Length: 148
Ligand SMILES: [Zn+2]
Ligand SMILES: [Zn+2]
Image (cartoon, rainbow, N blue to C red):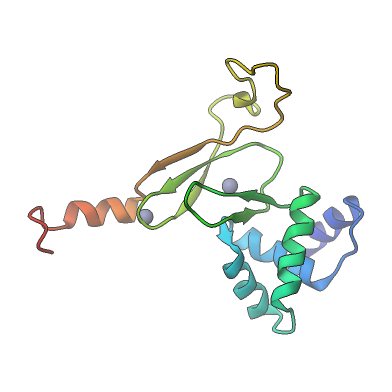
């Protein structure tokens, strides 16, 4: 809800502005979208918001931790408002679809590395790669001799 976002922005000592609210709302409704899609979504609701404003908002929100930036190998950066729980992602190799994957047990268990090499670890990034249901279905349905 918009009011929740306003509270979050104020808690992060950020001014509540229309571009910031628009970006947060876009990411809440469409998690894991890339910058171009955020721009599209934000401008669909508020045509006066500039591309640059969306870039700036994404940077500020990522810096302050209100938005999490994920970047699967070989893919463009994606953004989401689900932050702070160190959840993981499953990525489709074929179409790039991304879904959230909760940690298997408890809170952020993967932060306990089997060997942290003395580093102070505060984040773990896990990406599972495979095919989404749609792409898997197409692959099975495809002509096994490769003609289709
Ligand atoms: Zn797919
Ligand atoms: Zn996610």
